Image (tube, rainbow, N blue to C red; front, side, top):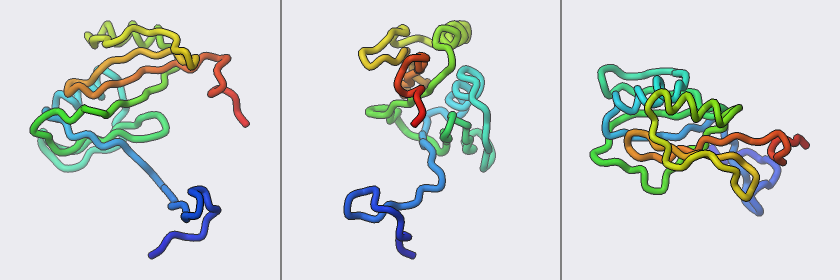
Length: 142
């Protein structure tokens, strides 16, 4: 089945219709990573599949999904980062510190106007925790 005729959003190529998306991670220790995302970051579980310690777990991730499934022999975090927007970065910083999360870079306002802090998951996947200030252009609609 070919691509449907949609407005040309990609130059001279037809655009594909994306119905859903998710980030897939293959952790070295699925139980440890599942605990980090579920208990430490507090992400809600969308669904689980399979059984046993290597079962797949899909978490809600704002407007997307994060799936932990399978097992990697070694961390594959090189070049991968997650961007998680929160309402209040200072409160998120306190909560994560209370849960023992090591902050890689303390919160600060970036030249592009966002407030950002960096942490990492157990396999070293870097996670940017972001607050969009009230006066930032990302808050404007239209």
